[in-house]
Image (tube, rainbow, N blue to C red; front, side):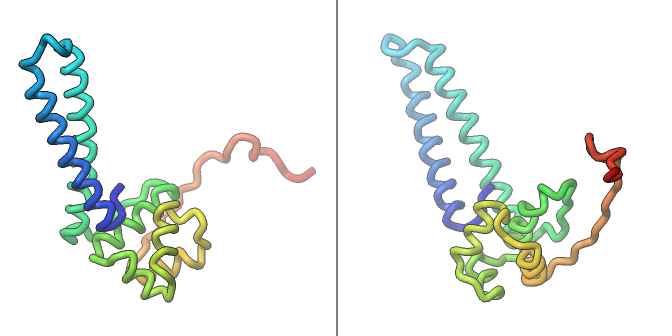
Length: 155
């Protein structure tokens, strides 16, 4: 997932390099004496796959930056940090701007996002939610207790 403009520029440059490499492989296909056609095909397929992955990431970031998405769905608590990052991008806010709103250094926001907020306290996450102007609607569903919990009564 692309999290900032720097990563976006790097990913875009990598996509261009992959496109160029794919063109070189395609132009090499006429020179069958040097490289087996199956090897060329495998190389082209690998480049196409990597390029498709990068293009998907670029498109997702562009879609967020277009600010067309205003609601995000979280299926599990593990998805929450990713949604915070997506919401920041969709709000048109840079990591620096979020840091300024929170009275932090940009590097701290970069660290939080790089680790998907694993080092952030719940209090800090709440501050991020407020700084982004998010409204969180909560629904928690109780399912069967995890293995080993049922029947433990402390006796």
